[in-house]
Image (tube, rainbow, N blue to C red; front, side, top):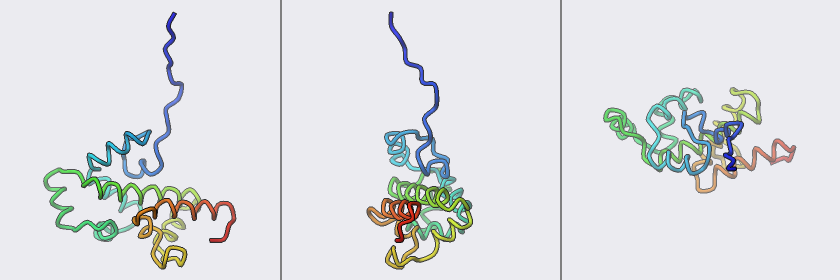
Length: 148
């Protein structure tokens, strides 16, 4: 007799993917989605969520407006690098919202320069190599009451 495993629950979405409208429940799916490029609507939705203008969000990830509008006009996705940057921002944003339990407080914290991050905002710092992990580490320390 052969038994077939049937999962009883759906795996949760990876942190940050829900803010971007990306369907990924594991790192392989996320990597494939980022490599293929997120749609321009992911960037627009993220900008709206943070209360930033499209121009501010594009400047944050280092994408020129002309390149963005070219992608949008042609129905092309963002580049893999821009998609990865956007994911790092979404992951950090979701973690901050969880910690502060207030979207407004989290967004204020994310957009205020901090000495901990070399006088950069946590969002700016998250885009540096290893930056998103460090921002998440700082949030974890704050959650545990460790002054950072």
